[in-house]
View 1 (cartoon, rainbow, N blue to C red):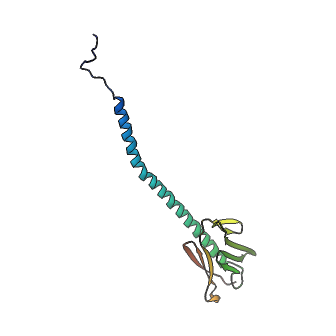
View 2 (spheres, rainbow, N blue to C red; view 1 turned 45 degrees about the vertical axis):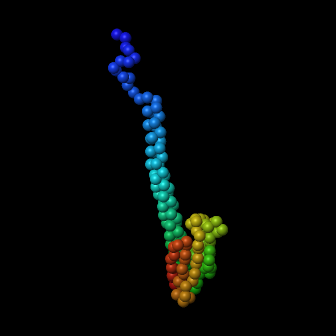
View 3 (cartoon, rainbow, N blue to C red; view 1 turned 135 degrees about the vertical axis):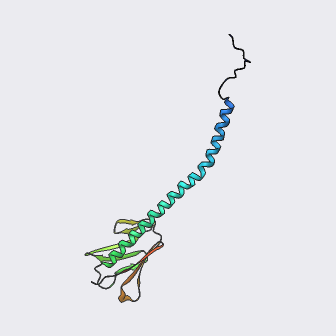
Length: 147
């Protein structure tokens, strides 16, 4: 009727030391698994940022090329140089300019950020009215349409 401490029915469950060792092993294992996952997540974020930057640059180049083609300037674009493009379109002067923070601005509006290089160059022969625009590692050539 009374149970003896040395009876044949052992107690069920885990000892405290078994639980602590299991938790330690799970912690070490999760640390090894987490490092590659964190690197993968960071790489994905970096690729996403680079793709957004590239899209922004391509949009800015396309917009500037369209403005060159449709500008009101009779023979040549009035201001085309390193860090600036000035032209007239629909009776308004439009100024694309890279500021000291690396932001490409159209008048007071942000067109692209993180711009390291912005160049505009009139290509020869001058009567061809061909302009090359370079933003970072992307470039486009635009013809000035006949007035």
